[in-house]
Image 1 (tube, one colour):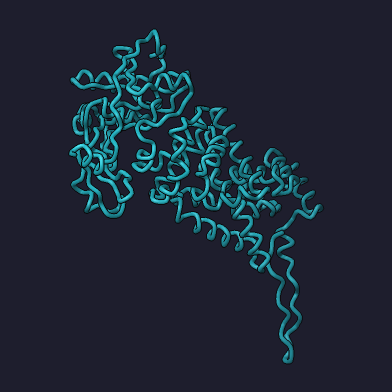
Image 2: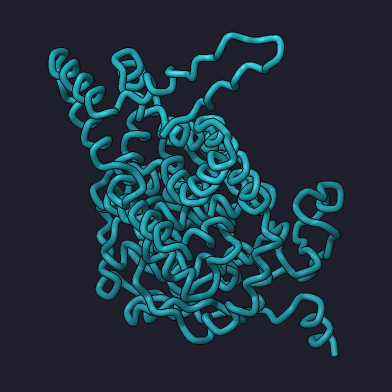
Length: 471
């Protein structure tokens, strides 16, 4: 009776796995690949009498022979016990309270083992209901989504609280052993992505796990276990309740891990692409729009594969451009001048997107500048071109023009002209400007040619001026 009552209140609890210690002979992790920062955090915690392990994605990637992006540490020390041990450490987070230990620009995230909660509170609303959440260590909303999770416990319970078996692996560099509770090493060898516990309940606890399935399957090239895949379609609507800022963060991870194309394909295969980027849904259904978006994602993957950075501003400007371009053309057809029409189109598209995905203001501002420079790149006069070269967003706008030209959205000649102009000396630039004027490329001069008004008469109104447009 009591067990049934607890199950009804808390849901089915994930089974605690059996601790298995895997020696170096089997795991083959090269400890020399771990940064001294992560090793020093583990050592200091252990020297203070606490358990401490490298955990999660770093262990998974080391076992796969990949280079981890970052290193996290898990311990039985509480955040309040961790912070005083390090000279530069910050307590952060409310939903999950953790410690950031800083080594210059590098950050090691230290989390405390989390327990299966003995009780939980259901609160009205979401994360913004600060009053209701103020004294809660563990709380969920009406759908079961976890809003607070700061109940500490032993390692075996922490392992059961993690999402995938391959992410629930702990490496102790002092003893050179990997601790596995849920057959994570076996799933790594079979390249299987498997949720720990009841997948449907785990998705209700944190709907972002739906997107993480797509991201890790794309990144690792793993097959999704049938039990993990089965509930996804029926739980996709849970993403509607996730704060837009958190969705934005997860979308960045999806598209900037070097596997953006594969991630989009996974989202489509799982039925999760609709509603995440609402205007992207429309773009992907248009032949021209899909070609542009896929080319942009392919370029992003290529840059990351070469060890280069990828700007989220450029990426999101590309994802939303098909709709911006469509609105831009429609506004110009209604007689709105080109630059004003583009500003109007940007307002409409970003406004429609903001209700679902909270694109940061700084990134949205950069996106606008990339878009706004597109018609200005058609103004090929000496003063205007030299000013554009000095614009802080010129390089991104030029790369954007190249992408448009490659996918048939802009004239290849214009992109080629700007490529030559950047590399030319003063005499060559003059020749390029003269050629552009002869070929009809001096669009600024065209705009200045207005229809001359006839002298006003008492019995007739003056003829209206021609609209200020850019081709």
